[in-house]
Image (cartoon, rainbow, N blue to C red; front, side):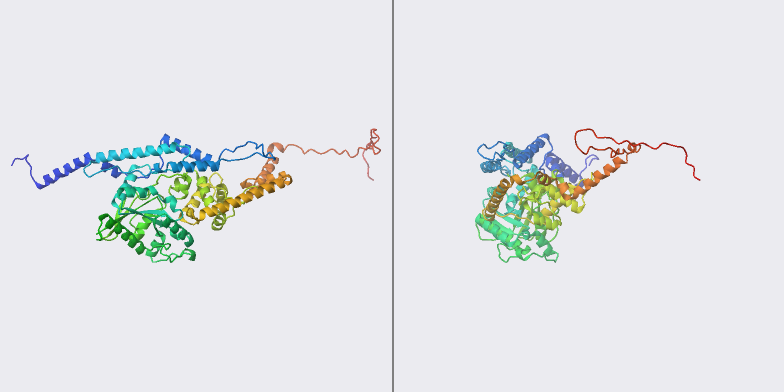
Length: 571
């Protein structure tokens, strides 16, 4: 054989390796995209997104602070200026628009595909379908009567969801027990049915240890009435049990009812496996148990998907953090030969009504990235009762003014300044460090230190809200009558005293007085004033007055000095 004609096993392996590299480079976009770390994109930095966020903030401000109608009601005898706000009408119109466009608010669908399609064709179809979905949501954002929350805008994150939905036999949607309907996405359940008509969705109500048994019973009644498959669960309690410890729960949160009881680790695993096997047998139309099933976990960020999977597996397999969006790729975990779990990255689904600040307070958007902290803290102040905040933080919040509604929630500025004063949080400028205080308060609310929970619609909230609204109407009417009856007795000094700011009401009056006194003293001790002699008042008491008051000028007495006779000689 010639020198240039080389034949051998090593040369064949090298040629095969080079051929595989060339083929992978032709498909290379897929491999290059896998090298990048997936990041959740709910905010876009281009100018169009910035303008959209400004429009959203303007709409939120106009809805929260409507322009008052300052026209004088000629029919009223008092002639007082009326302050009628169309807030109720705006909310009604918004609800009508939401119901009208509810069908347009969907999760993106994966276009039809098959195994014979190339990667380029599949990628092009997915991008076109995703672009059409983005355009449909952009039309909703242009509607001034609708407020669309931030949602996931990264196509690769939605691709993770598509894979999990297609692979899973049973889809588990993890929600927060304090507000399950906020974290539930009904259209995702519809999409799962579109992929497979036998596929079902289980609502895993996590953090159920934060709810009393009475509230769990009402939520169970609501889920059964609407045909929702649900399970109460606590990843924290399960993780504590794996460590050999027990989570001490109050008596009001311990239940023996199977519908309201918090499932243990073994109970939840058996329930998931039985539900998934029932779906597979229904799909195959046979009574033979399948060899293996897969259960997928989906939901919003920071609701406890990864914590739940770690508790079910028995060891840490996925990263867990309080910052939303820790999980980047879906991953499968084998529990046994018959059960496999699939964890999906958290997604922010598009929805109506809830603002950006509510999503920050709920832990969906990162707390450390917020720029407007007072609005998010105001959400917490509106939800948590005043006495709960005062007892937890050992602070005293300012009481409402006499002319305000006594049952109003505290303002965010009042809560933040009281919190900063108790913790001595001061910024470099010398002002209260409200940013640090707001982050701490929001994290306490997300973790559950500030107890709060929502009631299911149609049961207690309507009755409670009617009672509250009636009491508010009675209070307002009573206050108006009292104001009209005592209108003439209100003094101007008292009103000015009530209108003092929060700083003056929290002990800063003395500080201001001390500062003013010190400034006066410094002014008196100024160098340019030291050379001036103090002015003496002239003594005019020697002048005689006219006692008769007859209009004649008074006689002035003249005093003369004794004549100087010279020095006095002392003998």
